[in-house]
Image 1 (tube, rainbow, N blue to C red):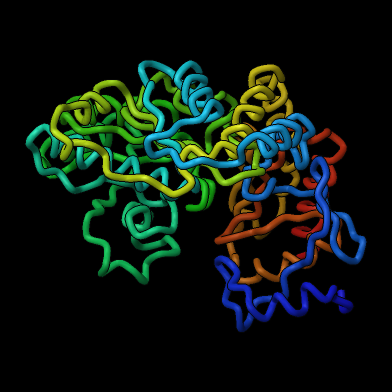
Image 2: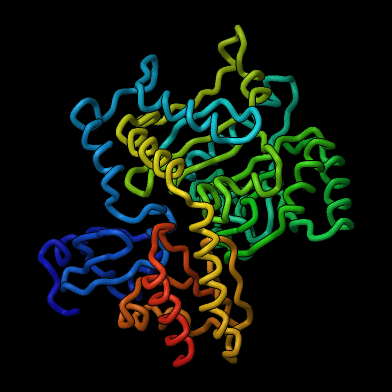
Length: 419
């Protein structure tokens, strides 16, 4: 595309794009419309979206039920501060999440971005112990993990292979570990954890480590982690910002393992991908450590847009869809189709692995040196697929039709075969 709209030409001189070396990166594509699983560019080209705007648009773009709920809320009250005041959409969302999540995950702290919800969860964990008279400031996290881009969350991302390695000297409260993969490694992990009195919590993305390279682990691993935390007396934080809301096949990934974390973080698909919104949900015993006559034991955190009424209205509408639509079988069908249609990639010389979990399809390459050159070729094939690290992956909307999904998998097979 050579003829850019005026807003693009002018605005591009002032925007700072994410994860981008602005000097050398190809020009971004101007988008003028979204609908279902399709993105329309300014020049009229239409792309089938294979990653659902970083997997947030679980119901597809512009879902009428969500838009109607937001329109109604916009006219009544788009936002009011959550300090000393509350609103119906926020309290309804809290009630519904407490009913959907397993066990006694009953207390919801509503924030904006996923990174902020993880920051809140980490603050909860540290202060939980402080309020009980213990000083525990360390967090155990795992290689290949990713939990956000703010300073606190960077401290619990992969310290060596992750995108935040530049900031290592600034981040001192991380204790990286390898995820247990058998009973022997699980026993060793539990022993190490019990021997460290400074650990407040273990944090992990359940079943799939997303931005670390779509790395899968078993439900048994999560059960080992839960048992190790119980034995050591530390908290378990599950970051379900990526895995929650049927992405891995269940409403929440922790349900596949049959465990209840002490704190869980949610975002992205929570609001259907139309509004910034996140939540950190704590179990009763965590909240009880803050519930006191002493004002100093309160959780001192309060985002300006906490309990955002408009975002909560979108989230409630998103939950309506998750509750009334049969997403379990739908995701199982997507998984089966991904398995079948990505399988031919296994025969390609540069393919190291092909793996599928729920509505996540991954083709891992042996040599990723030419990965970035694949992006424009996918656009030429009529799809929006954004490879990173050494993987080409799909995380489509859960509403994608079989023929649309076939266009995505066909493009991967074609582009990788030609490459």
